[in-house]
Structures are given as C-alpha cells and as structure tokens.
Length: 304
Image (cartoon, rainbow, N blue to C red; front, side, top):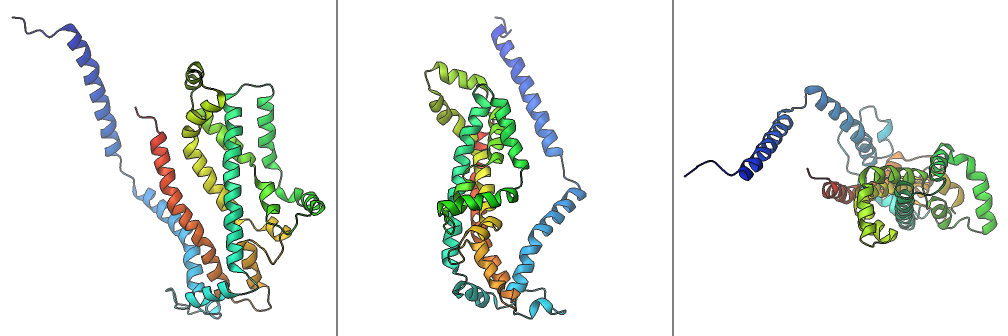
C-alpha cells in the first residue's frame, strides 16, 4: 500500500507552510523591534509640553490673587480652586451656565453638520464622476487659503441686515460646512473604498444613496469621528467671531470668561480657574470619543 499523499494534499500543504513562515517572520520582526531611548525621550518632552499648561493653570487657579506674583510660589496645587470656581460660576456678569449651554449647543450642531455635509461632498468628489469635479474640488480647497478675518465685515453686515446679530444662530450658520472637512473626507474615501466594491453594490441593484449608506458610511466612520472631534474643539474654542456678533448677555463660554478680566484689577486665579472649568467638557469628550475612534479604526481595518 502506497504511503505517498495525494497530489491535492501536497499542493494544499505547500502554500500553507509558506504562509505560516511569512506570518512567523512578520511576527518576529514586529516583536523584535524595541523603541530606543530617544524615542521615549521625545515622547516625554511632548507629553510634558502638552500637560504643563494645564498644570500651571491648576497651580494659579488653586491659589489666590497674589500667587502669580509670588517668587516663592509652591509647585503643588493650593486649596482655593473650589472657591475660585464658585466665583466664576456665581458671577452674574459671566452667566456661566447659559454660556456653557450655548457652547455645547452650537459646537455640537456645527460638528454634526460639518460631518454630514463633508461626508456627502467627499463621497461625490471621491466616487462620482461628473463634469468639473476636479476644478470644483480645487476651488473648495483654495478657499482654505482665505483668512476668516477678510470676511468678517461683510458677514456682519449681512447678519445685521437679517436681524440675526446677537443670536446664537449667527455663529452656527456660517460654520455649517467646512472646506477642510470636504477635503479630508474626499481623501479618506478615495483611499478606503475601492471602486470595485461600489460596482458590485450597483450590480446588486443598490442605488447610489443606498451604496453610500451601506458602504461609504461604515468605511468613513473613523475619519468622521476624527473630523467631529476636531470640529467640536475648534467651535468650542472659537472666540473671534462670537465676540463680535454675540450679545454680552448671551455669549459662548470663551466670550463669557473674557468678562472676568474686564475690570481694572485682574484676578488671574479666578480667570484660570474658569479656563480649567471650560476644558472639562473637552476632556470628557476626548475620553469617550477616543475609545470610539480607536474601535472604529480597528473595526474598519482590512485584515490580511
């Protein structure tokens, strides 16, 4: 009785052995890599540079009015932070809770609108063929080179004629779309979604909107999460346009905090305590959105 294995078994075993060897080599190379001293030193410098402004704000915000001018200032937080934070929250000139709601409301609407419009426009530029698409995309990208300050005067005149100055809508409407968001989603969808997948969906009878919903949106989720995060932070920290167009009785949080330093004497301990309070919602957003972002990237990764 012959012990020679069938030809089919031999042909199947050869590529499997090659695949196992290739995977083993890749695993060995990955596990064998160790970051050097300078890599960790560079990361430590970046970490300290990012955290130090917050720690400095905590040092001043937890002290009193004389802390910032004290040459013998302690490098440990004091015990006045809650008192300074209460002064910010209870200051009638600031209107902290109203300003906080205005910032959350406007930033959320702006970020959601930018993600939706950028995804739709990015899908059109990346996967739809229509006359003038390249020229239109170049025009959209070119608008990023125009500073916002150049359009402040005509924009203010327009909103004044419409009677919208002083309302929260005056800072939401101009920011509902983003040229950077369109460019970001266009580049991501071009690299992530293969044309063959779209053609397969169309052959199965899916409309273009159905293809976008079932193919484009799941693939664009990591980029959309990143765009939402950055847009929300940018809208939250925006000071220039809200300071011009909003009423001081109904401001956003950055504008409201500027009222803390409108007197002849500036208590920097109270100001920096208010700054720390304004960063708490952003830290919470990063804590939750960071997990969603990483999970979206891992779920959308192509497994080989």
